[in-house]
Length: 111
Image 1 (cartoon, rainbow, N blue to C red):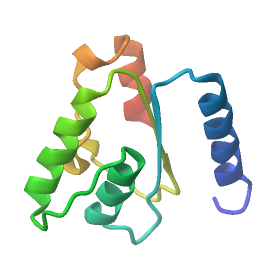
Image 2 (image 1 turned 90 degrees about the vertical axis):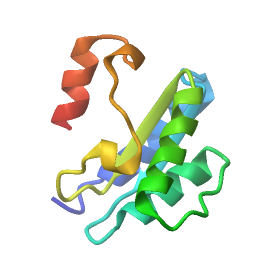
Image 3 (image 1 turned 60 degrees about the vertical axis):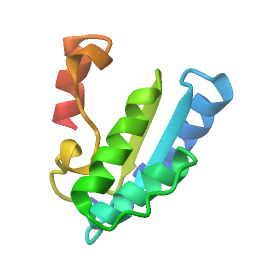
């Protein structure tokens, strides 16, 4: 469903969250129809101020996952999703211990 202002809304939410400092980090990545895992990983890494130079997807995933686990309070915003994205393939572990509640886990998985 294109052209209804979802990206604009996400950018406004991002701006407000950053201004109010509700999260330690706000990570924004555009996935799009033809985006690959490397591209998504690169965007997330750059938002965290890091570089991933490894070419191997498993190594990139492990490095990004380790970096994300160092952060306490992150808002990850993924824009322009067209298909289901397995977050663990990117390096995002949805460990219940890292979420505030099981309800948050359900909400994330439904998105």
